[in-house]
Length: 420
Image 1: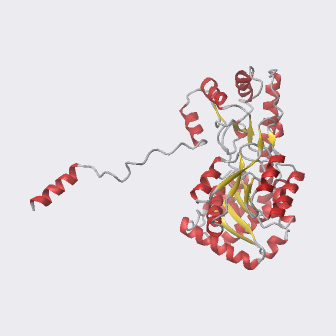
Image 2: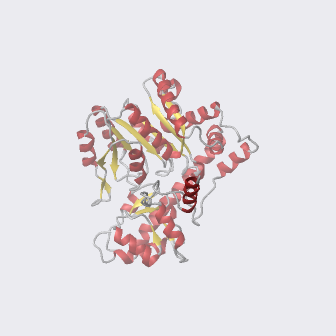
Image 3: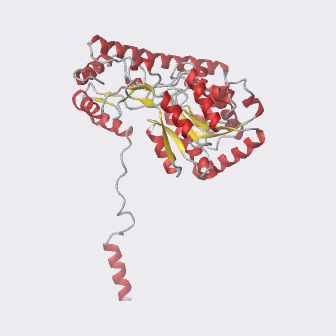
């Protein structure tokens, strides 16, 4: 009795130890840490060039009119239950049409296995898990550089990673010959991840002819191409044009995978709406692959949120809303293209000794500026301009009111350099 009393007393006066004492803080994400530093800065001149989500010319998030109209249409819908199978299937089918084209045999023949995903990140994570289960010995080849989270996704899925050369710092452009060598020298039947448009972080895309050569070499080696399409529409303002790379692979007879996100091109970042599609040899194979994807989804999160799916599905199924969306995508893309031109002109007007052609040669949301980590730190410290350490500029953060200030800041830290 006395021993039991003492045991209880000791337990009440001492904390439980041992379970998490060995856990340290995780490294900060390179993108979210930029936002944290920006928010802590009290300067009225501060600029956030880290976030890859669209902002208008006042630097504010945008709710597209097509989304507002879709919101009115679904008002009163019962959101307490999971989204219906019909709505889910329709979302997947309409998403696939954006990738492959609405008139393609892929859609008519049902040769795709598709599932809703938690935006593009979730779609990539689902495919990484699918790859691990079906091809546990195969690595994923990622472009160097690529979106930093790609490495986290395939690492956490316990899929080994390799890289293939992509960007050439000396030219601020594509290292095409090295890319082709790496595709050629990879073991047959390897997995390769490509950005079909608006490459993140470099803004450097292959030309149509280069895509054809990449496709041919991948077919020759029997590689599996997986496309992460997070920015469809942001490279050119044209949804079909931005899907051209995937359609080249389709025409060459590839089976492909594709992660899609509506976070950026519909301004639905907080809704996490995406799709994972895997093109199969026939409808029977597609049924089997889809069942495997659904099993993975069931164990991960069971079903995605309903509201965003209804918004996207409503827009894609209403011809007027879809047309309005396409117009608004072009408006967003055109603003980014305009800011690229203005930033380059502003730097050139300052008599910068450096060549800034890459600002307008690159496309999409991001500009790979060529600034060194030390110069990035100096921009933040002296001029309150924040971007990731690799010098990636989110062009959506550049506005009419801050572009001249940004140009002057960049000029001041690079005017004594031979290379930016």
